[in-house]
Amino acid sequence: MIDLQKKLILKLLTNQCTDGSYKILEKNELISLLPQKYRTTEDELNVIVHLLEQEEFISIKYEDDKVFCLCTLPKTNNLQETKEKDKEKFSISPYLFFIIIFAISFCSSFLAILIAKLISF
View 1: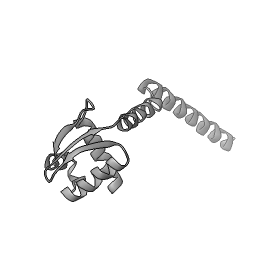
View 2: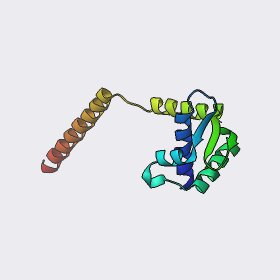
View 3: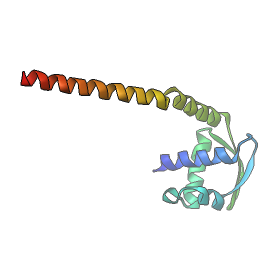
């Protein structure tokens, strides 16, 4: 569960810190932006944010009980770009998908009819 929460929080931080500069983010606001199913406590949020800092995805400049002052590092941007490239690699146009499905359906119907004729012959 921590890994999924960590990914969600990293994505959230990336969306909040778009230009690479330090941003002041309230902890309660970050928690409220998470999906209801994956909401965390402030203590869990602190642990996850510090894990992200240790893994060099973010840099924390300042922190107190209510706010973080942080920015995302280039490693985070590289991770996002890699994910987008992977999605582009495996995307298929709907037109090509339709042609492939049609061809498979046609061949399977043809084989079913052929087998039925051979059995009855």
